[in-house]
Image 1 (cartoon, rainbow, N blue to C red):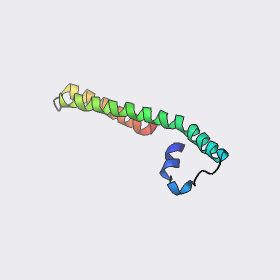
Image 2 (image 1 turned 60 degrees about the vertical axis):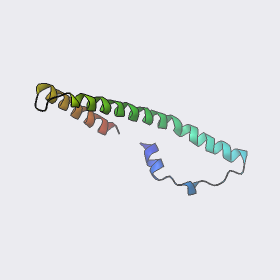
Image 3 (image 1 turned 180 degrees about the horizontal axis):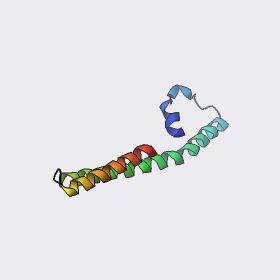
Image 4 (image 1 turned 90 degrees about the horizontal axis):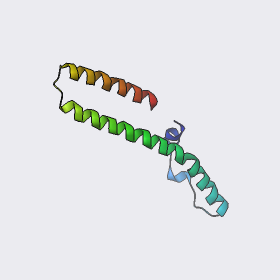
Length: 87
């Protein structure tokens, strides 16, 4: 996403000390414009982490090679592929 690309190039050196109210407002507007996208990405990441924690808990109770194990493995792979395409 655009936000990830932007932050991968982030450097504190890109910003100078605030010297005017107008400059402060521009920084505030930039932050506000990007914050919603950040929150959305953070929510997606939290959901993915929760899913993987649940998958891990379920794996410990399954016997390798069993039908339940195969079903869980297939579902996990579909989820991984879906999330990798989303991110």
